[in-house]
Amino acid sequence: MSSPRSAVATAPVSHAHELEIVEVVAETPDAMSIVLDVPEYLESAFRYHPGQFLTVKIPTDRPGGAARSYSLSSSPHFETDLVITVKRTPGGYGSNWLCDNAHPGGTLTVLTPSGHFTPADLDNDVLLVGAGSGITPLMSIAKSVLIGGSGTVYLLYANRDPRSTIFGRELTSMLAEFPTRFAVEHWFESERGRPTADGLTRALELFSAYDAFVCGPAPFMSLAREALRRVGIPAGHIAVEKYRSLEGDPFADVVVAPPSADEHTATVTVTRAGQTVELAWPRTTKLLDLLLSQGFDAPYSCREGECSSCACTVTSGEVKMLKNDTLVDADLRAGLTLACQAVPISSEVSVDFDQ
Image 1 (tube, rainbow, N blue to C red):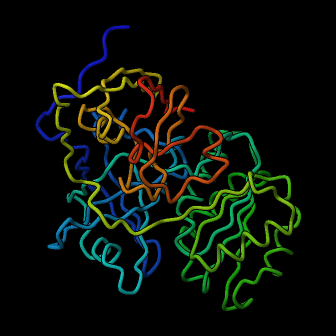
Image 2: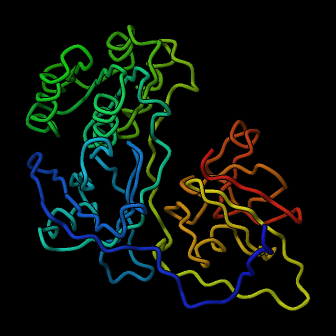
Image 3: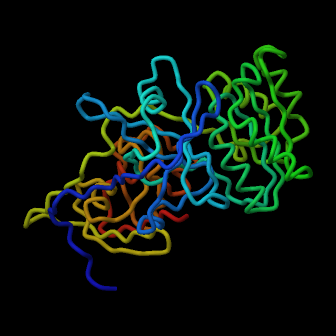
């Protein structure tokens, strides 16, 4: 292998992209889907897995900007365009701005897809438990399993009433197209009251062998997790999608200062999407900053150590995380680290974003 490329100060590298809005679809009175065109030269950068999300830049005069994460409701196994679905929330700056301003012919500034709320195998049976706009990533997963895999899909979907059901017509079409592999149970508060742990347990008790995915408001997700525990689904087979408010500006340009003449750098070998690069790694520089400054297309969302979108596996060597609010002990034992918080300890490190 050739000598590692040195990290040098360069012009700021932008990792944001402007995508054109080609269609806006009213899903309910307070929710809409925004269809984004991906030009051919960006197709490889915007390949994604079902259940992932886009980080969107929201125009604002606030210092540092405003960034919000919205799940993709489209499926990479079915649609060529990207689709995010947004529901207005009271006082929600980002959702209200998008619902008021998104229009065909406009553009959105976004980062490439991120997130780990995605099935490992589309041939597995999946249990999807969602409420309100939490249906968005679950829809992407459902379509992907039904079209790109062989698994069966059971969806429990809670809403206030039928009128507030996002994707109501599309779900009906999917039921007709996949009658033996797709089933939906609607839980309308107007008819059944608010969901309870006991009620959810009764609804889900037949699906203990399924892989479960949960998304929705925090109180609902707590009830759903308790119900899944009672049903007997192992914790390792339950995925819960969590969104955090982004305090910093993930769209800010990244510049890494060159190491001083007497600074001893580490060497890092990075693998992503089957490609490998070797770089000189200054010991006080975070790995994600190094990669972004060199034009390496690393996944990330917040750059704050709070979302785990930049998680990667250390396959050799040792790193230290300056902050970690997301990885648990099991993740650390498996060798995971957050690229946005990792600095080198050993002189040689290898990391893999594909594992």
